[in-house]
Length: 233
Ligand code: URA
Image 1: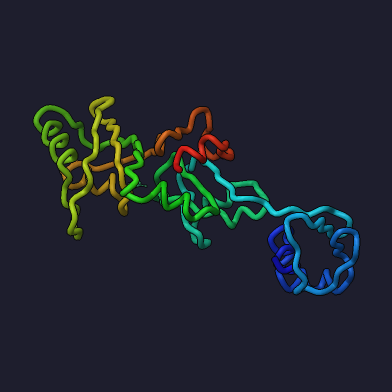
Image 2 (image 1 turned 60 degrees about the vertical axis):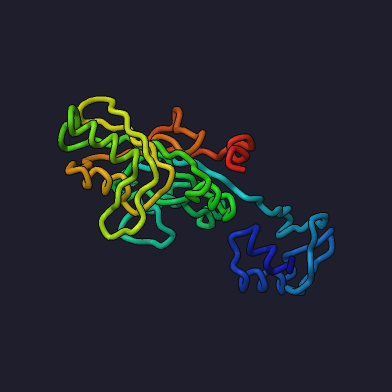
């Protein structure tokens, strides 16, 4: 990797500030000051900036319990972004793996590993996502039997051509529905309940594949361990 890029990857310097630091003689490679931004460094080289050793960070994987009024988007908008809650160096490189609506709470994964992200979100991988939806109207009796059937068979959402993949519905109480999806379409849970004449007043994602929030409180995050990352191989 070019030395200026290595500096931009491992410090808060931009590529042009890295070049300036190089010109000022602040950077050494294996104990020797190097000023050329285009010189190459490899894994075995010891790079220091102002005497501080620098190391590339590997790919990172994070789980967040997203509060409401936080956006899962890469761009800055009206609300803070999920990535703004992650207190890691260069956190802005992490991308949410799929999205939750701004008013939805719960489990969001973030990573800078695009392939891993694809494995989690691709409907072909059939990764289960469990949501807890609070409903405006009670769901019981005939209406519940109908909802089971339509969710299990797959239903056509407004404006779409393909029916939803089979989804599993379990009622925890008359107004609280646990819905397991194996895909992630736009506003899918809210639209599925709207399609059966109900309305979601609150939505929380409890788990994605084998990962659940555990003791993580709203607004808290943690890095995944190797086993958790490998679970989506
Ligand atoms: N379905 C929705 O309607 N909203 C979400 O945030 C996630 C799934």
